[in-house]
Image (cartoon, rainbow over all chains, first blue to last red; front, side, top):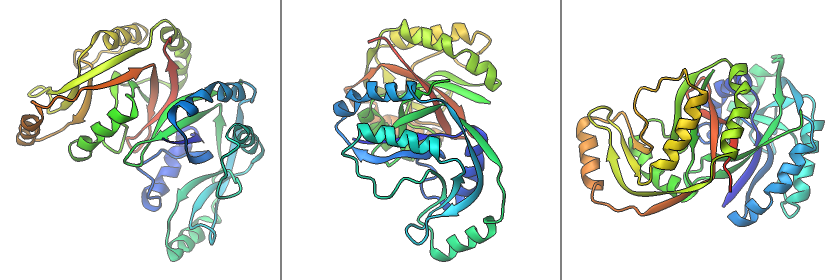
Length: 169
Length: 169
């Protein structure tokens, strides 16, 4: 079964992200706007569920925090992706690292840069166009992060939430 | 903000439901296959979140259970909806009733009949056609129900999972 771990920012941030994703993200209907903590990985169901107490432990020992989003950025030419950049990386990197220690066989394709995708699999021209029109825009968004979610993927590619893990408040 | 409470059956049941929903359910891309426990309702965020300890209490005091699905049924002519019928209603009705006691101002539009929608807003001819071809089919599905989920709705109509509540195992 395919699993992933993500943070969903508060609704106002998701609604804004969706206004772009609708046009520029082919995953728009497969998952809500999110910040990936652990990329998609494959694990037998029972093995995954056996790790849940460890996720609970991590959540309990991590303080809730607030993220700030001011601008867009992109991964081009490595990947034709545009995203809302998270200004304060540290708490998300910390959470990512703690989860990686449990899923230590999981080799991600890229270094972990916390981001909220608003466009992906874009043509170069389109990406440069959209980035050009958004790069000077100040977004000034904040979102509380007080939980993360373990997700699994259905046959049609969409993601379903299995369990929420509440950070310490 | 709009909220709802639902149970998501195990993946094999969701995949089967989606094979029909893809064609017959306009909500296919807005939410994964689910059994609604509490229909969409509107409540200020803070009021909703203040009720969470009560949901936790209900979950803790309700035993996990298994549902059985053998056949399709429909709500026509009340509503042009086809669904996978849950053979053993009692544990879902029990959970619904407990949640209703907390959300006691919430007046649902219909009596609560636990069901897993596979088609809705259908034309009469199409509904009768699909029902006609599925009504003799025995599905013989089971799914563990060991949690329910509180969801909220985004501007685009899609539903995001806010929190999972684990039943007693």
